[in-house]
Length: 308
Length: 308
Image 1: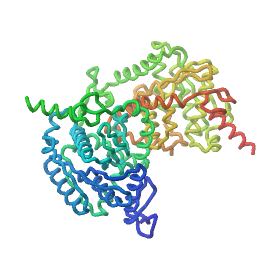
Image 2 (image 1 turned 135 degrees about the horizontal axis):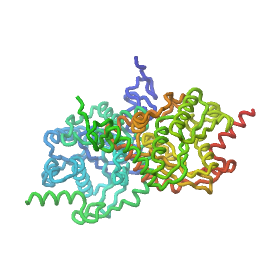
Image 3 (image 1 turned 180 degrees about the vertical axis):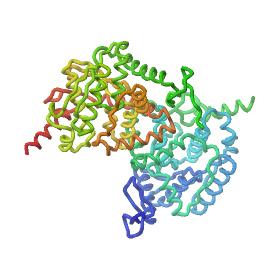
Image 4 (image 1 turned 180 degrees about the horizontal axis):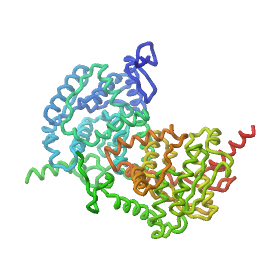
C-alpha cells in the first residue's frame, strides 16, 4: 500500500511528487508552481514585448505556449505562436492540425511556415543530401527558419520548449562520447539578441523543468498533443541516453539539474574562447563558420546534387 | 545460442570480450594484453627504480602487484609491496594474511604497517571522531601513511590500484552532485614526485583498465583475493553510482574511458588555478591547506576528544 501524500500548500491529495524539489503538489498548486517557474524565468532575464514561441505540437512546446500565454499580461509579453510544417507525412499533418486548433482555442496569433513552399524541400527530401543524422539536419533547418522569420518580423525573442531532460541528456551524451565540440557550445537558458549579426534572442523557459512536468501540465489543462512520434527520429541514439536517466535519477533525483549547472560552470572558459559568431556570407544570418552557415551549406549541397 | 568468439590473435576460443576495444581474447593473449598495458604505462611516464605498490588484498591491487612484479625486469623497476593493517576486525586480518602469503609466493619484499601500533588508533576508532564518511577518513589516513613510509624509504613512486570504474564513477558522482571541488582536484594517471614538499610520486597503472579485467587477471593467474567486503564501506553512496555504469556501458562501452578523458581535458584550467600544494605546519607532508593537513586535523581532533 502506498501512502497518499498531501499537497504541501493545502489539504488536497498530491497528484505529483517532485523528488528533485522534495515537493508534493495537488492539481491547483502544481499548475501555480509551473506557471510561476515560467514567469520567474521571463522576469529573471527581463524579457518584454513580443515573444515568438516555436511550437511543434509536442507536449513541451504546447505546454510552453499555454503557460506563456497565460502569464503574458502579468509578465508584460505578447505571445505569437510559430509552427513549421516540415513535410514529414502524417506526423507533420497531425502536428499542424493540433497546433492550429489549439492556437485558435486560446486566441493566440499563429504563423505557419510550410518548408516545401518556403524553402523548396521537405525534411525527408533534404536529409538524403546530407551525411548528418536526420535530427541534426532538421535542427539546422528549424533554427535557421525560426531565426529568419522572427528577425523579419522584428521580434526580439524566440522561446523554445527545451526541457531539463533534453539539456542534461545532451551533456551526458557529449561527456560519454568525448564530444568536446558540443560541450564547448554548451546549453543556455537565455541568449541575448545580436541584431548586428541578425540573431534573434533565444529563451528556454522550461530549461529546468522536466518532460514529466510538461506532460502533466498538458494533461491538467486539457492541451492537445500530437500522439505520433516523428518517424525520422525513432532510431536516434540520444533516446538511449535519455532512458539512462531512469537509472541515474533513482540514485539522485537532482542529477539532471546538477549535471547541467555543473557543466555550464566548468565549460564557461571553453565557450568564451571558442565561440565567435559572424554573418553567413550568403544568407547574412549568424554562423560560427568562416564562410557559409550550416543551413546554406545544406541547401547548396541539395541544389548541386539536384542539378546532376 | 551465443556464438563462440575466437581470439583476435590465435585459433583459441576467446574467454573475454572487451567491448570498449572491440577485442576478443583467449587466456594467453588476455594476460599478454593486460601486462603490456601496465608496461606501456610505466614506460610512458619513464618510471625507473623502486616502486612501492600499495596492496589492500583486493583484486585491483593484487593484480597490480602481480603484473608489476612480472614486468619489473623488462621495465627496469624494483617492486616493493606495502600493506596497511587498518584494524577493521576480520576484514583486516584476512587481508593481511592473503597479502603476506602472496608476497612470499611471488618473492616480493613486503612492508606492513599496523596503524594501531604506528598511529595509535584503528580506522573504526578514528572514524568516530570525524564527521566525514568512513571511506573519506580511511582515505586520508592511507594516503598520508603511504606517502610517509615511501618518503622515509627514499622511494620515488607509489603505485595504487585505482581502476577506470573508480575514476569514472568519481567523475559521474561529482557531476551529478555539483561537487566542483572534487572535479577541480581531478583524477590523474601519474603525478610527479615533489621532494621539496615531501611528496612521493604517484602512479595508477590500471587507470584505464576495468575491475572486470583486473578480476579476470587474478583468476587466470591464481592470485588470492580477500573475499570479505570492508564492513565500513558497505553503505557508501559511491557504490550506487558504480552500479549505474551497467546501464551506461550498455549504451556506450567506451563511456567510462570517454568520460574520464573528457573531464581531464575540460577541468585542466580549474586544476591549475585552484591546486597549490604546501607543507603541513605540523607533519611537513603535502597539503592544500594553509595550516594543518587533513590527516593532522583528524589526529588533533582525535587526541583532544580523547583527553576530555
